[in-house]
Image (tube, rainbow, N blue to C red; front, side, top):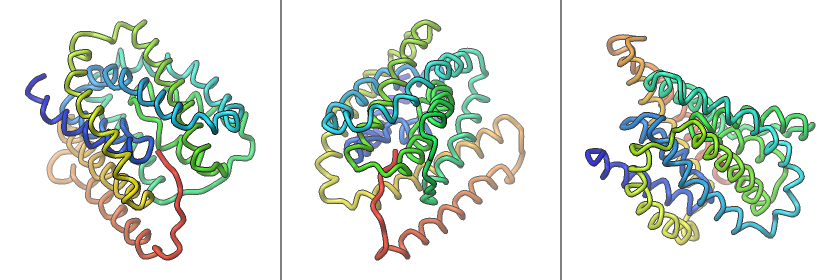
Length: 285
């Protein structure tokens, strides 16, 4: 564990900086990198413990907008109830390397959808929220990440910045608390996972306030977009590495996935920056 300690401190410091700046993104930045060093089964319980506190902070900071949004996101929260136990069962039973590969494969298209700036309003919020909540519950319990699909859903609903963050904080606090309970019932809070907390907490305590101070000097949407690109490249590297390690694909062809993702994301970055004068600031996780 100490072998990877310094790397984990650096990873979580950067992720906490992003979370402090944008109000979200801790797991989205931590998981793709940390899974190169650790298994989901070891990493997830430690991250969930941290995320309960982080999500409570985001919700508290945006509590003034909560009365305007809680009814709209309640179906999402209800949908989490069956999804979280199912995802926890997957974490407890699936082979670590195959679970890592599945995590990366699910995250990659979601990250690219964010990078593309996908917009499509959801009309039937309640029924769609129940279905989406179930999927988010499974995804979060397996990966501790729900930001990409949740951001795509909430960004399309015409929420203000404060409303977006309050809705995000409420859903993510619910899913992190439910997942912590499910992990505890499944016996996943073991010494290996709890031993990661001393390596994670310093980065969180330093990174969050630094990010909150720095965002006033940064263009939030450009910063978010750069973070998404970084995520996409790291996830594609993880996919390529695991395809080779699991002998699904052999030789240099394993890095074809990474090459394609880099090409697609480079084009999306070019499109984003070339449209800078018409850029619209949005919120995502």
